[in-house]
Length: 311
Image (cartoon, rainbow, N blue to C red):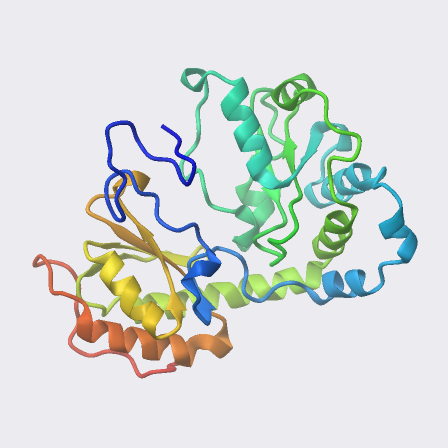
């Protein structure tokens, strides 16, 4: 059922860390940490062009209703994705369409390909990994600039589908001014930052490899290393305890549990920026001393990497 604060299952008490507790959302400011690696937002963002666009806002752009915001967003996404603008539905980030689909569709008639949450923008070749442009008329693909471009404070995105009727049936008649003009101004500038995006993608993958090297020696966790996206996942029975120690040293991570379908538990950690590596490595070195030893078979090499090691 849904509670006023957060979702939990019927019959579950929902106590902290319990079966029905989803934990703090990634990026929750109540963590009060200096380096928050719990959220998937690109820590190198926003691109300079997005900041320049904000600085150049004219008074009239604040005075007038954003009549053209949706059109501008569709046009830039149509160019970015190489599709017809008529196949795109604008939205307040991907979450608006996700909620709309949950209300409008019978879940028994919906197939969700797995992994369902991997923002293709972070991959080296986003176009090759996306289903945008596929011939099927019953495929809906969601895209948002929020995370990769480091502009999560803006709430804009699109849904793509060959079948325009299917798209419009999900949300009904949209508001005339459903999008913020300021958000769209920032997003369109960010989406046009092609050289910045290519450079940052390469750096993020290097950062992710560095993070995997730091995590692999931690006692009590089982790293599921990847070299495709900017975060790492590990099974961890004592994730909340490890996260608490890291938070004391200024680093936040995402703890996953039964409510996320992960038993006994896990961690999702976004790779820190290159200039943040020293502080993050030092925090994990301290956490390693507190991490409880768990079942045999989990990796725990005897020698930790040098603090601040570069890869």
